[in-house]
Structures are given as C-alpha cells and as structure tokens.
Image 1 (cartoon, rainbow, N blue to C red):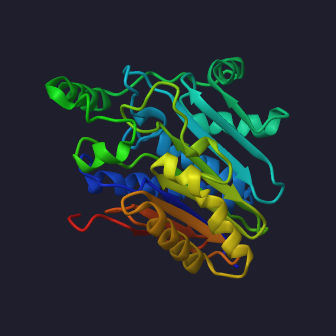
Image 2 (image 1 turned 90 degrees about the vertical axis):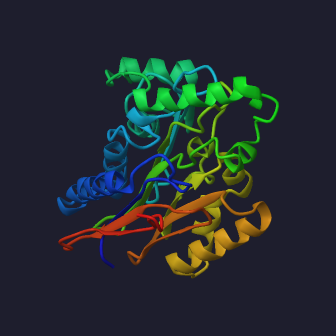
Image 3 (image 1 turned 120 degrees about the vertical axis):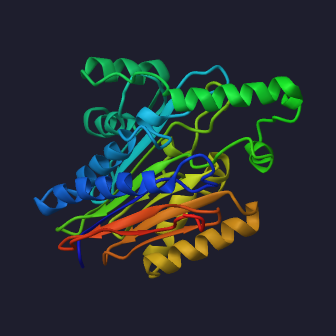
Length: 313
C-alpha cells in the first residue's frame, strides 16, 4: 500500500480551455494534497486541500471558475466523504463561499446533517468567516453572453433542460466538476468534489456533486468521485457503483472500467467519468467523453503522472 492523491479536472469536450493551462493546475492540486499526506495528515484533509486548489484556479468549473445559470448567477455544489468514519458533508446551490468544498467539510464536522442547501448553507459559511465568492469571471460571462445570443437567434425552443441536446449542438463545453480521492499513510480513504454545475442550468438545479453515492463516495475499501452530466450520474449512482465493485474484490481500474461501460450502455456516450482509488493505492479514471484530464501522485514520487488529455493536446 502506497499513499496516493488523485484529482481530475472534469470529463467533457474541452473546446474552450487550453489543456496546457490545465496541466499545471492539476499538478498544483496533487502537490497540495500530497503535502497533507506526507506530513501524516488524514486522507479527507488531503482530498479537500487538493480540491480547494482546483477551485482556486479560476480556470475550472468549480469555486472561482464556476459557470452561471440561466439568470447569470453562480450557484455551487460540493461534497466530502471520509471513508474511515463514514462521515459525509455536502452543500447544494450555495452562492456565498469561495470554496464550497470547505463548507461541505464543515457540514460534516460541525453539524448533525449530511446536506445543507441554499440560504441556510450560505449563512453558515458567512458565520464561519469563510471567504466570499467574488462572482463569475469575465471568461464565464463571455460564454454566457454567447449562449444568450444563440438563444435569441432562435435557439430557445431547442435549448431544452435536457443538456444532452445543447451539447450535441456544440453550445456547451462539458467539463463540469472537479474532484479528488486520497489514501493516506494509515490506509484511510476519502473523496471530495466541487462544481459550478452546468452552464445555463435552470435556477435551483442541483447536480450530483451534492449527492452522496452519486457524485462522491468512500469507504474503508475504496473512494470515488464522478464528473459529467449530473442527472445521469444521479440516476446511476455512479460513485457508489464503483466503490461497491471494489468492495466485491475488483481493483480500481477494473471497477471503474466496468462501471463506465455499463453506464454507457444505459445512457450513451459523452455522459460521465469517474476517478477512483482502492485500498492498495491503485488510482484510475474511466470516462466515455472526449477527455478527462486527471493525475495522481504517490508518496515518494518526484513528479505526478498526468493522463486523460484530449488527443489534440
């Protein structure tokens, strides 16, 4: 067993981001999480710290880089699970915290609840003195204005709530979640995930990242985080499905590949990806989209391993 941290930057089409800008973000997140593990810290703290680094990049669809809904507002989801204790914390449709994953961890640590949503969760973030989200970036708002213009040109009827159609039309750039899984020195496993959701989503929509078993899950045997179309991930309970396969005796790679193969048969391609680590320290990502940039760093390695890049990168 070798301690490891693994992160992903989202499964999807990768039309609007330069992959050479994304790779350093992944590397920073991995090193940030590994600092916790190397110092003897817990897997849950490592996964959260790595996810915070992804949120703070401003480049990915989480935290500072979160996309907007149909009204031009940012609402975010996040979740954390400690595989050792079974502790879970999640937040949905929050607007206040710069780092929703940190608020999700506080829900796990400080409350009797699993999931807090909307105004109540935002009040907790403010009461805890968390840094406030500054609002959408100009890059996000530029994409928002572009999509609004297409709708005004006659796309309103076709731009349905089933995001798959908009994706096929090339209106959306799907890479909608970031996440991390970790195995620490003591063999503890954890998962953390954060997202701004799907651009142009209906206000109030909550995706898989706030749903334990769908967007994230961890036990003493395995940990997984999902990315892709939230509605598909929720229906398939993707993260739970992968971890259950690990618990049945499959290694991380086989568990992930089998689960995505099954999901693709049920829901089609370009729908999801999953990142997983097992109790032996095997990390793997499987996806049915164009790409899913991800990487891992084992304790003692000098450099991270990066994979899942678009063919054109």
